[in-house]
Length: 131
Image (cartoon, rainbow, N blue to C red):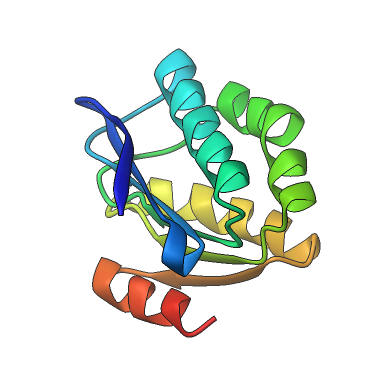
């Protein structure tokens, strides 16, 4: 496992032997910091020929509409083209964040992504390892 990006908002790691990118949000993240984090993860995903992503969003709240739209336009298509198949999502602790992530998960499910949602990152990682 190697750290791709680490700052006060996020840690992004790649585990090449498991074909997995992992991110952990440390606190509410949005705007340029959020977008740069996703781009760093995307680049590691493509470079290491990953197929899995683990999102630990427990400490985040709700994604802004601008960030959601940016992700759809600048991030998701490249991940799908690179072979994204499985997403383990550790949902935010706050209910508003959970609602936001449920909507996002439904969008990705409609595109054919295999998604499971969790409250525990260890359970999320164990599920992802089996995919």
